[in-house]
Image (tube, rainbow, N blue to C red; front, side):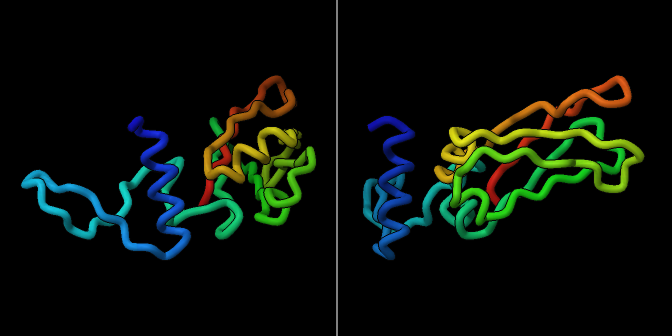
Length: 125
């Protein structure tokens, strides 16, 4: 079984509240927590907990992508001005919202302003 399929099955069992059984090194079965993975961690979820955003070379910009925006999955353009003296815009597409719904992070680049852009990563909280 490939890692991705294993994680999907673990997530499905966890969401159903079923105990997860895995084989330990000694080949006996014990209840084990699901493996931790930043993109598929079952304790996080964009639809449950919303998102976190990171902005490269940040000097006061901020981006908040709500769990409602993720759920609606309609393309949306955000201002990331925050406390900076200038503004940038970043668009998250419907497809990128679908990626967030699957608890995977996305990356985008802001519009150019004051001679620069910012790389932005949105991940599940």
